[in-house]
Amino acid sequence: MPGAWFLTCRAALSSKGLRPPMSNDDLLSLVSRWRAHAEELLLRAKTTHDVNVRLKLREIAANYERLARRIEQREPRKLKTA
Image (tube, rainbow, N blue to C red; front, side, top):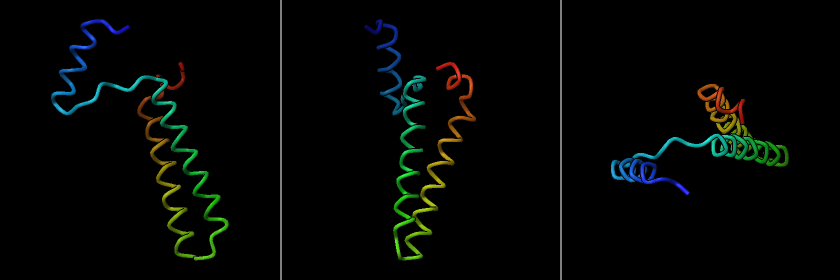
């Protein structure tokens, strides 16, 4: 159960529109979800006949992968110890 200090800090951050730092598990989950979305979009792109849609799906998948890599590069120590 979180202590009073934690709850006070969380309330202070929330009042300013800020969020507390994400935990290792949350970061790993986020990276995993983004990679899963990217894979799903790439699979859809393979079965799409419209060239423009296929290109857009690949572009969006690349953006999800880029987001995942950014988190891994910004938080390498957190993600390696999890």
